[in-house]
Image 1 (cartoon, rainbow, N blue to C red):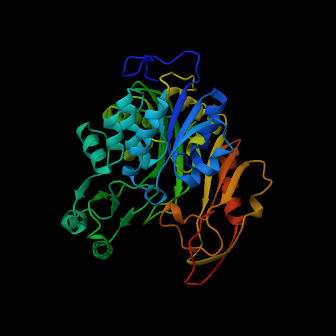
Image 2 (cartoon, rainbow, N blue to C red):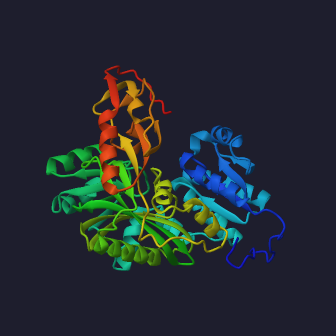
Image 3 (cartoon, helix red, strand yellow):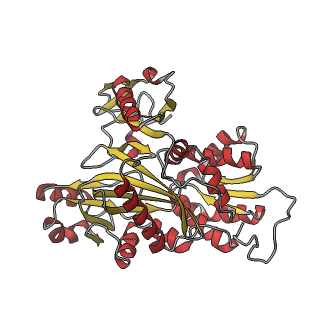
Length: 429
């Protein structure tokens, strides 16, 4: 509900009826919203594919309505606006909440039309376009890499060759898709040969430094809570994330302060109003963060669950209350109770997945949940984007050292058998 509890048509909700939330997108990592909605006594209408809706329907009694999205078009931003608008007209929701990248713009448009809380159209639009982010952060003087936005990769050749190594990335993608570090003139020539007709791309000077993210809850432009997450990746050229460590930085006060100040600057630059911000950055030094990108939606890789585990509060419930126009009670984020992480397994080589044995991950008290992502018969390779990862686990440990030791033990204990069958068919589980 809008912050003054009044819709744009001037009416107020009936005090005696359950409040309704329209959830645009409800993937696996959005299930926290459904659990929280049930605990809060909310009704939920969901925009999703029929297949995904069938998985959810019997598990969540709070689901009261549904509008389908075409399975074949679900990855496109444009596919979500019409069904979200249709369901909003039917439900007259008190809140609208989007889940992942393709849902951001449709959600913001419906929020705007209904006068409901959200990040705002400006913030949502900039969130979905990395070139617009670079323009806005440049306008406001926030630290970011030197960069060029180019229609064709070849047009940036002179600029890039003077600044190697550089990073090439699409302007609107997720999960490390299309992100590539280019280190030498020969590598640049190869990238141009492969990607010159790909369309608009960003070329950025490579920033050496540890990767982090800040997860922030924002209410009416004010940052209520921040969490710092440390990353481990595959490294160059693709930097696919293999470990996220939430609740980080209690022993790094300079880093934490710099990250919080950067986050507040980004929220102000976006003109963000209400919701969640996920800011990724590299730290050249503890007091020198450099922005990589920002998103005004639920971060992937189970990070929201990690935030809740590390700080011991219902972060999904807090986000629902924000969407309803309320200010939730949240910790300040400076004193995490646990060290929570999400671990991802990359294939040791290329071929066909013959078997994946994760039995060594079972019955471990600090392993909260785990599962395989790819099934036997799938073609695999060392991860070049997040879709290549074989398995995941959510870890909940007493200390950062215990978390990192457990992550290393799980990776070493996983058994991955590969064959060379070139006719394998990709199947996720």
